[in-house]
Amino acid sequence: MATARSPLPVEFAARVRDVIVKSRYHGADVAEALNYKGLLLSPVEERNIRVRALQRLQDELSRWQPHEMLRRKFNPAHTPTPAEMYVVIQEFLDELIQDERTRTW
Image (cartoon, rainbow, N blue to C red; front, side):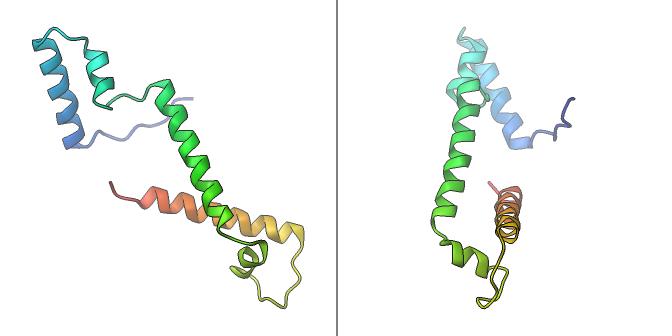
């Protein structure tokens, strides 16, 4: 199933076109020029992005003790169940995802 794509930002499209024109003018390989400028998502770069995302998740989770994570939602006097801990972690992940979605570059 194909994912709907967003239109390219104008500045990004201009950078891509500039690299294409310059690489053709100089007789360079267009794909290599785009990759060199960081304008292609190669399989290696895609893996690096996934690794960085997982590393961020690990870093964020390591900052929280279990009782601190639970206090995000529950009163300290409450004795939470494993299912409630699961819900708290899911909400935490939702917050990280929302933060990433709204981040501006």
